[in-house]
Length: 193
Image 1 (cartoon, rainbow, N blue to C red):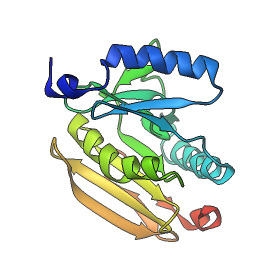
Image 2: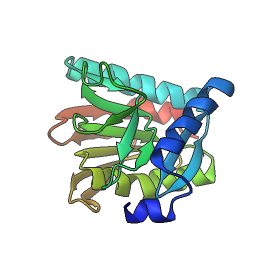
Image 3: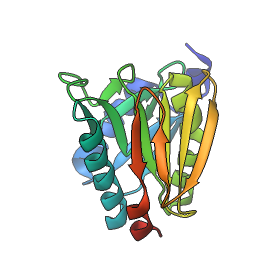
């Protein structure tokens, strides 16, 4: 068993069963499991949904062979973590036939939109960048509605992202390869908190 499992609240398989039950019994609830700890992902507000919708349209327009999926990901070096990003950019058919928690091998970028809930905000800013870098996901895009900026994390080294570039809403953001998309972030000014 790995070090994460030795101090974890439960095994990944136990977490997956709990997440399945929670999803079936409590409408819209999504659970995450990072660093061996269980967490509840807050329900998104209307502006959160607008941001994700804007990103789906922008990505499809620029790269129609890709899609912004909403699958749970197996993350961290040991793949014992489970994260629910707000979007997972991958080839459109990448996760066909897979279960609720997918391997991140085909993922080009994950996206997180900040929430008002303090614990979720900490996960988006600290825990998730590390988990995604450990997993080797090429790009992590944080859309920060509190500071009105996007933060592009790239060049994972297996521990952290070597490049972290914050840009204010309104600027054009160039997402590095393998994503290779430029986003006009002007519309994001309409959905800040």
